[in-house]
Length: 82
Image (tube, rainbow, N blue to C red; front, top):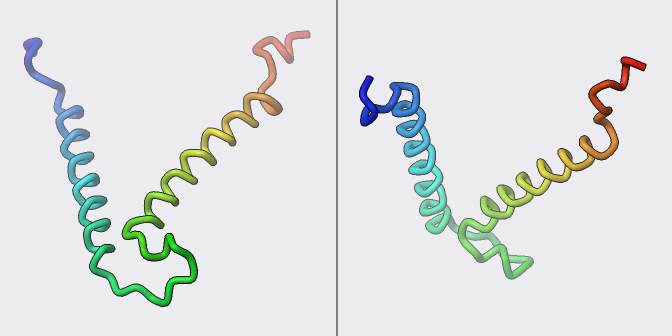
């Protein structure tokens, strides 16, 4: 394999990611055409707000969980050697 060629798995992953991003963009565009119910809050009228809010909340939850895990659950490497 020459230095210019990429492994087949990287090509497959990049193609799969492009498809997933395309689906994400398509869903956000379609959300703009969806009829809205009576808005109780101002963000109910913003297209794609729920998707963006859910993604950000998920990322925050992951980092928060990792922080708690590292702070309280992890033990030092030689914990059981004593």
